[in-house]
Image (cartoon, rainbow, N blue to C red; front, side, top):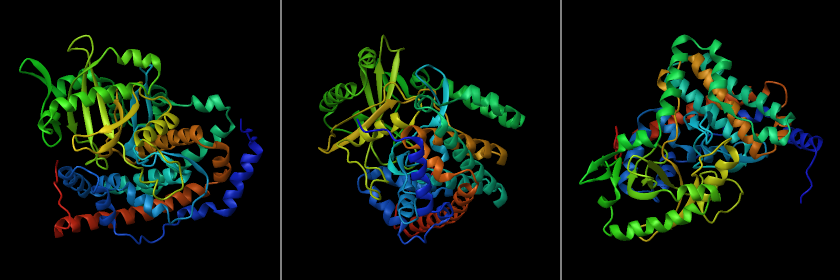
Length: 460
């Protein structure tokens, strides 16, 4: 086994990294020298052509949804900025809408990162910068003042620094078990919430608790011709029978893939999974940045038709981070997503797994699978007050630090950030500059749509 370094050696590395890249250098945002539309178009080449205009339409709607879909642009920009050189597992797309509540296997409500499509290894601050900039963009969308926006981003970065410093002093198992349970966190902050926001937060948690397979059964399916089927809502939900010529081959391939997927989780979960059988598959459009990649929902049935399990199979392509840093290679990008999620998330879906195989067009594609709905919910930015966004940003900063502490060297990161406010001021400066960059890139997309360079379907 490789010898484990003591805390002193790790602190020394962190301080050496600070000397090589001072914390104020994290504020730097080099002038972008790329064509944002060309970068977005490069992603479209591997996506479902008829769905790409939906992605452009959603991104063109306003600056925040554009930011959500522009992880590749930011990775390109971050690659030209000074970095700490301290590498950890990254979420890769740590904007505030990719955090939220969900039900753990123990049926408790937790708050954590909940999207890992772009997870990869890279400089720890790339995640912090993407989260902080998302808060600034969101604050601008709510027409908060510049002072309010800066207070929000500083609070987030400060919470990250303070949390990672606390994690650095904990034992290894204590770090691994660190998590945020929603009820505990609400009890801790309820005095800081006004009555309106507290009610909204409690409502979010209540709604998330109801989002399960039973709820999805009533919303996504119907009884038709004597059997349970997905309700078609093209182009957002389309049963596979309407997309392929050889339906029998498709379902045979599904059986094979589900068997391979089953092999990627522990034996006890395999036994549980064996109690379900597939009923139907449909293509589903999800998110903003993911639109155009292949995403499927699979209706599984247990004891009877009132005992459903909905799985989501999302295509996994190379992380946008992978083109800009030296890192591991994966024989299956779905495995990359799953392993990154298991490493960073305090408690993951019991049916999280991966597989790959041929699609009806003959292309081999990688996927990861998880439950479609398992108590998931995220904050509604459109109703956040400045105080509410600040608290939410702090919570996101806390769980991001806990994830980095599990996945990387918490002592080295803590030593780099230090005890002063230098890092959060630099991160906030960067966030303000990047919000301006994001606005310019969003205008470029709107102009591209107006000029006919790209086709966009708004409102879908």
